[in-house]
Length: 334
Image (tube, rainbow, N blue to C red; front, side, top):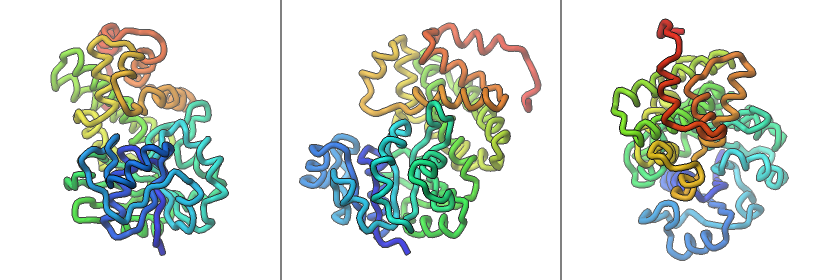
C-alpha cells in the first residue's frame, strides 16, 4: 500500500506531479536541490520560479534534505534532468526503502551507456526492474498544474504495481492508463524531444504546418523503427506515450524543446538559445545518445542525425532541410 510519496525534483514537472498526487489524497514530500527555492515554496505555497501562480496543496511539504524526503516513503518519483540521474541516485540509493516503488518521470537516454532511464535506475539503485514504473504521455506541466484534462501512461513490468500507481494519481483532471511496455514508453518520451527540436527549428525558419506534420510523422517512424528493434510493442507508438506525447511536445509553445529549437531556427547559436531558456531542453543532450543507440542497433534515424549535426557538429539549420529533402526516395513504410 502506498501511503506517502517523495517527488525528487522541484522543477515544473516534478512540482506539477506532486500537486497531482496531493490532489489525489497522498501526502507528498517535494525535494528541491536549492534551499532558497524550497524556502520560497514553504513560505508562499507557490513554486514561483517554475509554476508561477499555481497554489500548491498544504499536503505538499518542500525540503532540501533528501534523507528526510525519502524517509518512510512508499513511492519515489524521480523528476530530475536525465543526465544527472546516475549521480543523484548514487547518493540516494541507500535512503530508499526496500519495498518502495520508483517512478521515472525522465525522458532521455543516458550519454555514454545508451541506457534508458529505468535501466539506469535498476543498475544504480540496485533494484529489481519490476519495482520501477515509467510515466509518459502528453505531460505539459503547466496545463496539468492548471488542472486542464490530461491523460498519461504508467508502464511497469509488473502490471499490479502499475495499477497501484494508477490508483494513487488519478484525479478529476488527470487520467492515468497502464501498460507493461516500458521500452516503448521510454523511447517514445526520449525521441519526441529530439523531433520537437526539429519542429521548433521549422517554426523559427517560418515553415508551415505541412513541414511540421511531416517532421512529426517521419519522426514517429524513426521512433517506431528503433522501438521495434529493441523489443517494444509498436502499438505503444500510436498511443499516449507515442503520438500523444509527440504531438503535444512538437506543437505547444509550453514545450521547452520546441521553444529551444525555435530559437535555433531563428538563427541563434546554441549558446544564445541556452541563455534565453530557463529550463533544460532534454533533446539537446539526449539526441546524441539516441543516435548512438540507433547506430548500435543498425537503425536509420535521419531527423535525429540532422539534429545532432546542428547541436553538436556545427552544421547550420539552413543547410539541413535541403539535405533531408534530397535523400533517396523510398516507400513510406520503410
